[in-house]
Image 1 (spheres, rainbow, N blue to C red):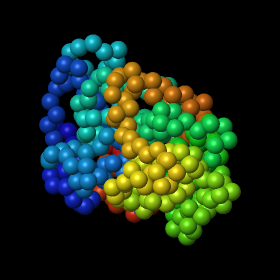
Image 2 (image 1 turned 30 degrees about the horizontal axis):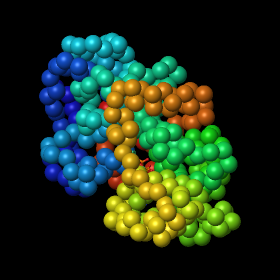
Image 3 (image 1 turned 120 degrees about the horizontal axis):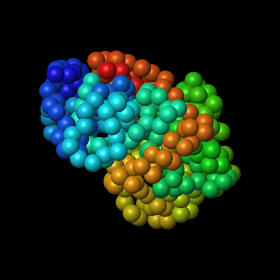
Image 4 (image 1 turned 60 degrees about the vertical axis):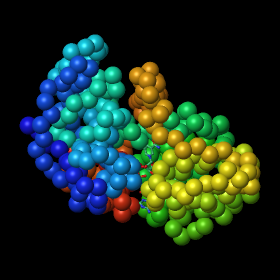
Length: 324
Ligand SMILES: NC(=O)c1ccc[n+]([C@@H]2O[C@H](COP(=O)([O-])OP(=O)(O)OC[C@H]3O[C@@H](n4cnc5c(N)ncnc54)[C@H](OP(=O)(O)O)[C@@H]3O)[C@@H](O)[C@H]2O)c1
């Protein structure tokens, strides 16, 4: 027997229940992992609320790190006692122990702690997907990153800056603006005070930016499109303020032959090779100190409901972990 957070009916944070669960022994291809740190992500709130429907009951959570306690039959380079991290299906990281496919787990390199690994697998690989697979900023590009002081946001700002971009970022408070600025965001805009479209136009002398990394969704639409130069790329990758309404192809034409993509990390790490190569790029920038992973909040796993409320009320910055 072990403990996990379970959801029996989609709903508010109170839907997260701490319970005993039976997980059994690892089958062929699976690892039994004792989680030491679990990553908190905005997607966990979509699963909990039913925005991304999941059959109930289920254990939520996509990101975690821990130690291998047992290995089912089958080939793997991993061994009992190895520290591993993960961020893909199946769900279920909000648990003391869990089963997980060996070919989707990544061995944590030395120099990276379990807490950092649990904080960066989903958020950091998402940043890697956005900056290295979808739109890699050229040196001197001015780019716009929404929610620049958030989990994905702080990693994106540092990495985009490292690639040579000038970073414009949006945040909701002065405190978050200071934090973003200390992490590579050259021009933080407090979008709850000022019109971010006007500010981006001012900072780019009316030209607009070639790319917008937009994890905010509903509230930054259609403003994000108005920040783009002709043939610019709108990467709408999240719904922190709610889902974006349907976008007509003609809107993209009218606003300058724009490109739009709605990516999901899972589709960029479909094979073990894709997963390991993206993880290698992330670990490289973290180990050389170009990107620092900031664990700014920590809760016990039992207190996941409090963590969800704080995340949804915009009280968190950087990454958050839940400790089993
Ligand atoms: N597509 C993918 O594969 C993928 C993978 C990972 C994450 N994501 C997305 O990336 C985004 C960031 O994820 P995260 O886990 O790092 O979260 P986060 O950025 O730490 O938290 C979300 C941030 O969004 C901003 N926000 C704006 N309007 C909001 C509202 N009405 N309610 C709550 N927050 C609001 C807040 O920053 P301010 O207070 O500064 O506005 C808040 O801190 C999310 O949309 C998530 O779904 C997508």
